[in-house]
Structure formats: C-alpha cells, structure tokens
Image (cartoon, rainbow, N blue to C red; front, side, top):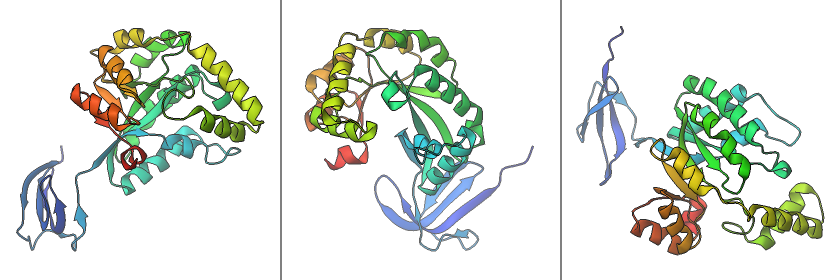
Length: 274
C-alpha cells in the first residue's frame, strides 16, 4: 500500500468560517492537520490565490444540458458525465447531487422508466469522477404510478436525497400565466392550446397526493425534502409529513417558517437574490 504524503499549501488566501488571511494549510494524507498564518518555504506556493472549502451543490440540473446541448443533439451518459464532472471541479465543487426527475410528463419527455435507467447509468460511472457525485431524486407526489418505482429507486446506490416535487402547474414556483407562455414557446403551440393543456394537467394531478406513501417508503433511509415551498401551509405540511429540508423556498415567509420548525433551508442563487 502506498503511503500518503504530508504536504503544505502556502502563501494562500485561506477562507475559514470566521475570516480570511494569507497563510498555510498542512495536509497529512487526506486530512487537514494545521491551518496557520505562517509561511512554509518548502510548501506549494499558491501565490496569494484563494483557498476555500469545497462547495456542495445539492441540486444540479446540469446533466440534462450535457446530455442534450441542443434539441437535435444528444450524447451518451458516460460522455456527458465526464464533462459535467470537469466543469463542476473547475467551479470549485467537490460534491455534486444530480437532480433526477422521477415523474411522468410526455410533453417534457420525462418518464419514470427513463429516470430509473439514467440513474442506473449514472451509478455505473460515478466512481470515475474527479469529485464526489450523488443522485438527488425529484419525486412527483401527484401520480399513482410513483408507487411502482420505490423498490427500483432504493436499489440505486448513489441515491442519497429524496425531495417531494409537487408537479401541479401554477401552484408553487411559476405563475400560471408565465407557464402558459413558457410552454407555448417550448411546444410551439398557441397560447390558447398551451393553456388548455396546462389546465388538463392541473385537473388530473390535483386528484392525487402520494406524499404519505413517499414519506413512509423513505423515512429513516434517506433525507427527505420539500421543493419550492411558497406558503406557510406548505411548509407545515412538509414538516407534518416528516421532511427535514425545505429546498428552494420561493418566499421569505416560507423560509422563515421552515427555520422556525427546525428544517434545513437550502436556496439556489435566484431564490437568495429575490
């Protein structure tokens, strides 16, 4: 077995929870053993570059962009994964959760079977990355079919986070008016046709709520979250169902209620800016 070396990174602008300063980080094998403001003449000189803790992205949609960079161009998943991994490392990420949508939406080319297949392919290549990779499942509670896939999901080794992602259009993140316009452009149909399709989807999905079954299936196995909480009532419901994470709340009231109830609160940059 090869012995892991001790080395130091010196003349770096080091970021700690309290402050940043020019100094040295000493590493023994893969463990940081010392952080000091002293310079090490024998260390690796970073010439004042920033040295920060690796970032964790718990919800990345980037794999889809690498798989389908253009509507008419698609690449094999191992190829797409390689470039996603390289880009993530270049951005300072050391752990990345790829969001996989477990839902049935033919208009957006999404199926449960497709999500399972992509997750299995991702499982097979995850160990080849430069950084740590896991799968974050966006699970649609407004579908009877979701119950059929719990066992297959549990068999995915890299699945480490389950987030309930209510899929009723116009209920959370996007206003119905904005969705009508967005879908019309995406599907290349009229605004009237887009509205008709969305209202059909709303009526169909509003009949079903499988959140209790989702919580029962994954409680104690994986962290469970609720996506795009907008109202206090939605946060309270998530808490009642056993969620420990409010992911990307869209209003300050929802974020404050989640904090008050002891849920973790995670925001994407657009949410934080708003």
